[in-house]
Image (cartoon, rainbow, N blue to C red; front, side, top):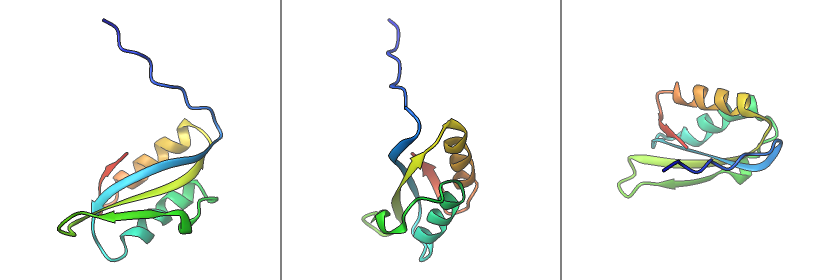
Length: 90
């Protein structure tokens, strides 16, 4: 049985969510936003949403961008994954 194809993203794609899970440090939100803003300067810090884990050890942050292409998304993923705070990029 073959796997169904993933839906194709049409670029530019407004309101593209990038979710990042990592250490619940005090400056976590700003660090994540600053990394993403290098590649998506139109993103808005006011639209950032965040949620702490039950014990406060981890934090999940979602930033919405206008995705312009696969290269941009791959570079954001690479830069976020390279940071010590980050455990997972979705």
